[in-house]
Length: 212
Image (cartoon, rainbow, N blue to C red; front, side, top):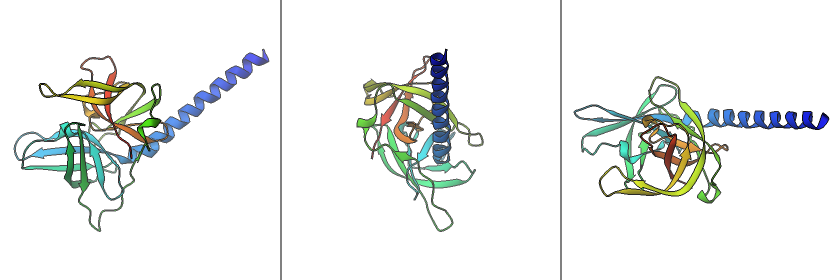
């Protein structure tokens, strides 16, 4: 009887420890999650999720939420409701990543960035992850929990004949608005940026791996 009681207590404590770690990770990462808006000169704006990775205003998101037009403006909306214009610094079509920089001046305080994992060698199949999305600018960040189900995966790209490779496959519930949002481990480190999901309710998605 004492053996089973002790085992149950240990299991409960382990579960509470994981729950506390998940909550702590969400609290640490959520302030760095932003809504990215691409606004063309004509037509409807495109919304996506991004993540602040540098205190001086560096923002990572997915390349596929960009608009291929010379006359397009980009902004982020932070969790405190403030809107900042930003400039596209680099885009990588092969990896489906885009890097922006907020137009900083003396009125813009330093941001609280999310951490990036030191090396992809630390990412293993079976790792627990959290996926962050910010679908509506005036709503709280949405977080889903899942697992790294496979590594170094390839999928078809959005244009005929194109493909994305070296991806992290994740098992979690995602929606379109998660594009550009981070996938983080329970240490609060970004291991990838959400780039694609299945077109059904299978709960499988893919992220572009990143590290320092």
